[in-house]
Length: 351
Image (cartoon, rainbow, N blue to C red; front, top):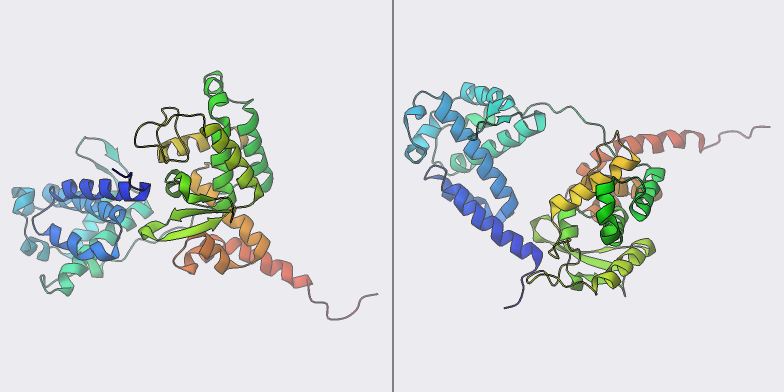
């Protein structure tokens, strides 16, 4: 049986997981998920299912009427009775709560906004289809987000990071035990992330036949399943070729033969493993910055924008569907470029 591409495997896994999550929701919820399926990815629908579970758990704890019911006894008429005040109490509840495992959960602005956005989509679906008469979620304002500083690596920090991977001198003794076995892979992986700006999920999902050295490109699957080619430079090419030469001597586990990046267990490397190795090396170079694979993506976007000044090119290469997302991330650089323009035009010749 032919091995499925990574993104298709993950999609199947997500669909199975989603089916199980929907079983823990009220009986009218499956219709919502069927309705939004054409416009959403399986990952998005899983996020919705999780957020709705939190909402219904809140109602069963805090709403006197619904508290008497099992999850399967909740109907659309109950949803129709929820008020704006109920949802405002829900937002307050989200700030600090305990989950079903009695673990403390703290949601900050972005977490609360995401859960409220999920609820707005949920209510809008039934309201537009005239299955409920009230839409209190439409009357609740999303929390104001305080802009966070964009964290990225500076040029000298990028060089130091790659040097740290190559020499491994500042790693702990335990880390050094594995370093000789992973440094070529780690260097290729980090060079690829820093040299293309691809997402960590796109990186771990790479198969051997996704790399085209003749044209200097890799085939990746963006959010939503769109297939695109991202091009790489000579540094990325050299690092990839070094690793692939080493990889020829490895024997992958069954089902992982096509994966580009392998773990020490000879399986496709996981997103969590990449996050951990980025953290491991970044801690050596810049201990005060919390560097993640996404921060490496921001680092690439910053470098590309500095070199080209073309925000539309940056948006296209990074796979942003809305250029405003890109503009928001690189607004500070825009200001720097505007400042640099002030002395470019000379009105009179100076002696």
